[in-house]
Length: 218
Image (cartoon, rainbow, N blue to C red; front, top):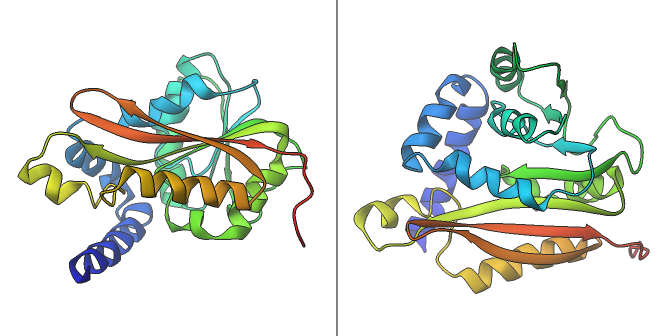
């Protein structure tokens, strides 16, 4: 338990670095620790999209935005990190105009019901902030979808999987993690469905939260 707490603290510190002064290393590190599967994991969100008004938050270095563009969407990307957005703008040159906005997830600059689907892949710690999930819900239309990709893991037992799985979000119990994801979404007013997507080498959790019309408790 102590080792896990140390690892999680180190991970949070590393992500602060990756998202700001060392944003230029993000693609390399994510590809390294995932053995080249990071983009395949994030693309698990695409088949679960609903509608055409798509928001990604945070958009990071823009890889999923490019994949969404290739799939025929024109998504909007939001991130608080100026470093990440600078890298994303460089990647998007020549890929057609896409809208990028610097903003906090707790205060999205969009009207109520602006989006059919919102995507977040391997989100930082803000997902545990009820204000973030409430804001994402606000920005979705009724019955809109919040698609949350997280907790990837390597399936086959190995030294690599023991070292890396805790760093990429998986705590060791799929059922417990599904419950955590479902509870976080349901508390915020979503109907939740969670599945594990992958192959013989790795899997990733994909939660689809459908916005309910039920009035949330004050």
